[in-house]
Image (cartoon, rainbow, N blue to C red):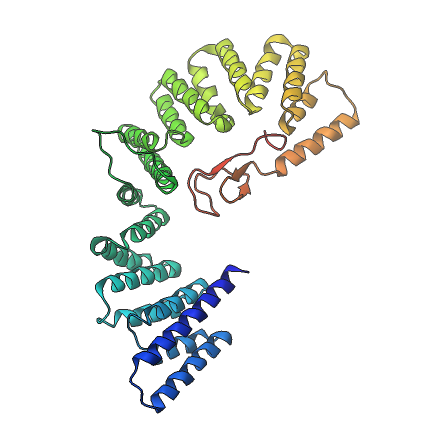
Length: 398
């Protein structure tokens, strides 16, 4: 059963309960009871006939607003928003706000739902004002309001505001006692917070403000010690400050924590060793990393250095051994590039096919929703989770 159908069935149940409550709530006066019943069926008919505007007017005009019928109004607003009828949802929720007889906490709930309407409509400034009011005044709905505020600031790329809101979503930390182990929800907030600091650091880097960028990245690593992006940005700053040894330490730590991203770190390794260590030290480092990671990028880089130093036959043997242990398209293509691997049209054809397959395959996939593509996104464009996209490894990877 589809989610939209479930929402509609839920709404029908809520409407039925609401109309029944409204019917019982009104004084018995014969004709009014008949009118109420008639309006009930008319409202449902409008919904079933895909006439949301008429359904909204029926509910607003004929269904009283009280504690018993409030769930019906809220259900209608949520259903309309889920179907893309945001204007109708806004009218339903604004109608509720015009009824000061509702308890304060229920009004806060309506404020939250109206803010969600405005977010769906792209009117983020109005949503922000409503959510701030809920955060300041409601303990019950504060957590939900903070989550939506964080989403707004993330969308608007207001990273300082996003950081401040994310910090409020986490339990307070005490330096006097060991912090409790974070649950899945807190870990998601911490991961997002870590990337917010990375985003802030990138802006500071563009302004050549290395001191504050370093501080931001230290915070990023504090909230997510496995955030490879924070280590790569820190290594980049170290190189800009002519500190290649520090850059290498950061990169080695990143590989120890997230070996899947080793290929993305290769350009930084290359630059660091160009300034520190020399060619032989670089080759030794490549061979060591290639042995302990699943990425073939370091194997291929090592093979290119070996070819210049030891000749093609030794290089081919190294590649063949690596390809037997870890067969990938990238390694197979590199084997076929070697001058002693063979010759003729067959090898050229095989190499061409392999290179074409390699160019067309996705390079990254989201662990959360399965989104895949050839570009690395730190924020998944599909499920909007931070730090869930990783390089594809194995026979279809590098």
